[in-house]
Image 1 (cartoon, rainbow, N blue to C red):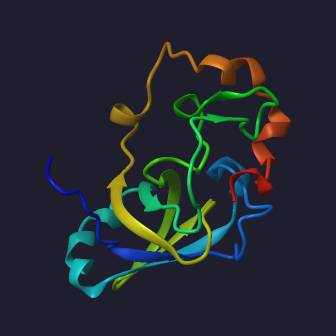
Image 2 (cartoon, rainbow, N blue to C red):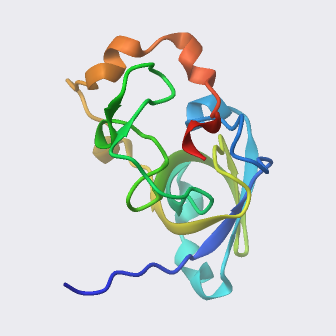
Length: 161
């Protein structure tokens, strides 16, 4: 098996200094502005990205330690299998968020709907394309049964420190 390693391409800067009380998804971070400082060596890769309204960010949950294969997710009181949740404590602490792109200046991206911790290492950026990224006739398992409008603004707590 080959060795897998990732090198951050930039750092995400947000208003969130601690994990507690952070939004658990971008929908709960509506209007929260942030910036991404891309390393200079990757700046030329931003060409044409300003044409997109939304981005998929892939990043490292750098403050999360360890994992459990059974967790009680934020939107539930019942224990679930880790891979049936979006819990941040994972074997590979990788997160994804879809954010709105506001502006690009040189190697800095200004975004909105940021639900990441300040200082989060960015691993990759992908353009959001509705034709590829949206699906019809889907099932969201237990989340379909638990979803309520009030859950849109849920915040994190101590369970995934």
